[in-house]
Amino acid sequence: MLRRAFSLIEMIVVMAILLALMSILMPVIGAARDAANGTLCSSHIRSLTQGFLLFAQDHGGHLPGTSQNISNDPNPDHRDWLFGKFGQYAAVLSGALPSGQSPSLDNQRAQLSYAPQFGTLWKYINNASYATTNIPGGTSMTYRCPSVTATISGGGAGSNGRFDYAAFAIFDGTSIGKMPPRSVMHSTFDAKSNANPFPVSTDPRWMTHFWSTSFAVMPTPLVCQEDAQYNINGSAMDGSHVGEDQLAHCHHGGSFYGSVDGSVTWVNEPDSDPIMHWYAGAHLWEAVPPSGQTPKQLDVDPGTWNAWAGY
Image (cartoon, rainbow, N blue to C red):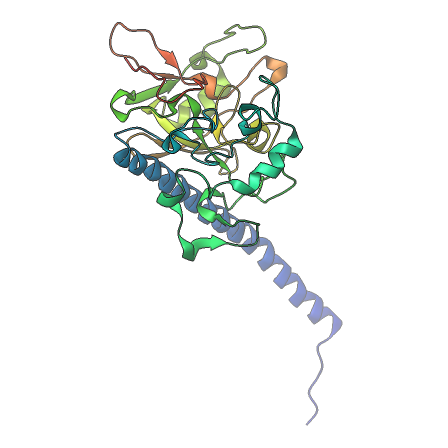
């Protein structure tokens, strides 16, 4: 018995139904993927933050060094949490470059292969079952955000392929006992004119973005996912969060901070807007001081181990 073949109209109807289903399911699948990536990224931030705290337990209560406290320190425990003795300024300190001269992009690219496996945090983070060997030297995926694709190192977008997270440089080797328990993102700051054009609380964009998260005051941040162009995959590929270095915006418009109490907080931190003289970044953070004392900004690069004096 012969079976009747599908007519052209029937095939078109079936295809239309399939396309309609795909149009419904694809955003759902995309949202589920984004949510899973965000969960994994926050887990990485938590692991790195806990690594910092574990390091402190083993080193007299002192946090790891940052990339601004590089390599000529005779104590190996004081070296960079990501690069160890191979940080981006190692060439300057060794005499290969004149003092005060930043390393070239090519020099930084060459040194990327040392991160993170030579960093002082590596032994607290590395899990051999969760590592990739597709990059010379190997790297732990805990240092990478799953939402960010590796691109040209130093290209100002994507990932440098080695790490996507940075630590506040001001807490280079800081004693946990001196850490401010809570910090706040204060008014916007125009780094070019050295002016505060308006406070956060009166600008609608800040009220919409940051303040709506209800994290105006939060446990002092240690680690964050940094935006590639400011500068974790830009002109300064290091693991320190200073100055105009910004939080990434790849998880529902924001990303995560890991704090001194071990908690992880999602923040939708506004991006910079040079036209409005708006420069977001680490310099917007300040420690909440004890009563009667002056707040201290968290964007300073101390350059030396345990320079934060606390309150």
